[in-house]
Image 1 (tube, rainbow, N blue to C red):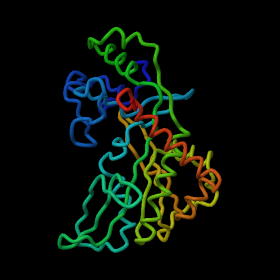
Image 2 (tube, rainbow, N blue to C red):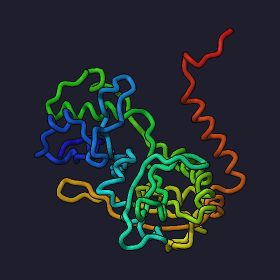
Image 3 (cartoon, one colour):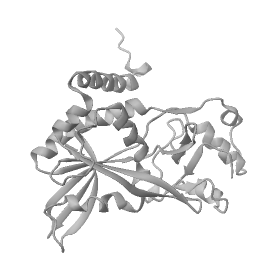
Image 4 (cartoon, rainbow, N blue to C red):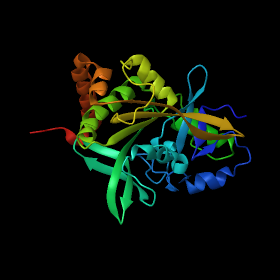
Length: 283
């Protein structure tokens, strides 16, 4: 086995020694999106980064860092069909992406249609861990180990990456708080899909004691966590845990006092990311 902090690159396990890495790197293909990987370098937009999963922590846990990794075989959508309470045999199922609603945008919406008319729908939000620092040097060192020529600056770089657990969890809870009210008003369901590691963190750091450990179809907000399993040098997702609550429950997760602080942190982070030399106001 190669010593690397990468787990999956362009949807392929780095432990797969029989893989044609020249073909993988040349194609830059994401089998989950069924197209070229859309996670690109800002300085070189023609180059896709391709990092799906990395190893992190003392135990080298496999942590998913790309949300598109969660749509493996589109299983997450099949696991939401029971929440289409108006769906009937014979209806068609559709999955559409990036749907704008009051309160923000939904990553995916699962639709039940009859005669091309929408009968029911479920919102599906994806959240994976945001990283700090950069994974690029780790990626480049792996490629060098496979015989690729890489920039020495990248190969020798001491830069590393970390996991932004706190901000990732805070940000998604704020987003859910805004969006769940819309779904609740419409008497529809919203599902958050996460890796089990992230949901474990959220339960420890936020108030989740009131969240039902047995998912109730009557609740508007559902949590679906997935475990990443490895077999024969390949990774596969499997549904691990389901929980549910409502809009009031999401508010309780954050705490009334903490809510304003969380909102402010998220807004400041967004503003901070937009600051550049071109945004300076001069007279």
